[in-house]
Structure formats: C-alpha cells, structure tokens
Length: 236
Image 1: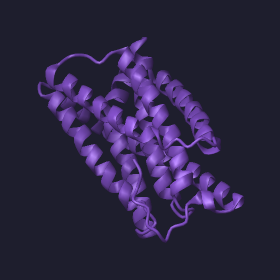
Image 2: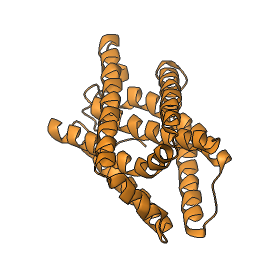
Image 3: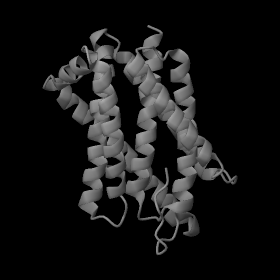
C-alpha cells in the first residue's frame, strides 16, 4: 500500500503546518477531480451503451471468468497507473494516470450501476455516495490528526486484502454468493485501509506527491463506495 520512498524526499509531516495543510487540501481536491472524471466517464459509457455491453459480458455464461479477469486486469493496471502518479513522473503523466485510474473504476462500476438504474434504484447510488463521502471525510480526518502510529496495521491489512481477494475469486469460480455480511466486512476493511493510508500519506509522502496521495485514497474510497452500493441494493 505504500510507495518506495526516495531518500531525497522530505515527508509532509516534516514540513511546516501551512505546507502540510496545503498538501492535504490538494490531495482532497484531486480525489474530487478523480471522482468527477469517474462520473463523466461513466456517463459516456451509459450514453454510448457500453455499460450494457460490459454488463452482458459479466452476466453471460462465462461471466464469472470475465468478471474475475476484469478485477485482475484492473488491479494490475491500477497499480501501474498509481506508480505513474509519483512526483518523479512528468506532471502530465501523473494527471493522465489519475484520470486513467478513474476510467478503470468506471468500467468496474458499469455492471452494478446498470443493475441499479435498470431497476429504478438510481437514488440508492447517490445515497451510497453521500454515506461514503461522509465516512471518507471522518476517517481521513482521524488518520491525519491522530498521534498514534498506525503503521502496525499494515501487515493485517495486507493479509485481509489477500483473503478478501481469494474469497471473491472463489465465489466467482465456484458460483456461491457473497452476501450482506461480506459487503459489511469489506466496508469495514476499506475504512481501516483509508484510516491507515491517510496517516501514511502525511508521514511518508512529500508535499509534491498530492496526485499520488489522491490516487491511493481514490482507489480505496471507490472500493468502499462499491460495497456500500452493493449493500444498499441488497435491501431493496
């Protein structure tokens, strides 16, 4: 979850209060920009009917394998794009990578949003967005302001992430359902990831790494958003 830290970079926590505050404001702004890009790309997918093609692929006879392939591909591509957001890359490349990450998320969200809007539950999506945004704001605030070192969480989070991925892969391959409790567990897990990442960004990222910080948080908050949508849809 952390990037290799070049020795010439000074972590934001070692900068003065004004620089550190301005850095985190830029991180939040860029998370917002990435979300706007996600919405815009999603609208294009819906306008062109591409969302239905993606949905048909994952709902077809071999849909499970297609969905697993999408998740794996998105994971590898997301990691690659995240690395391009580090300050060592040209500024244009950093922004292209961040918005490219938004495009990856838009593709992953297309099936569940197609279901939501297809059954007339579009309002549920926006309710989930509000709940996720409030949770994100609270968790990042705690992560940034707490004096307790949260680095001890990293091994447990990595292990839990691997187990969650194994559970998702097994459910897809063997055809069993991951129900409401799994959605709740994933929301809790991503909340802890956001808490850890928020502190990690302040303690390890330089003040010039706002795009990288935004990319890290964007991926986590979008995963949380996905499972909040899934949870809300399950009650309808």
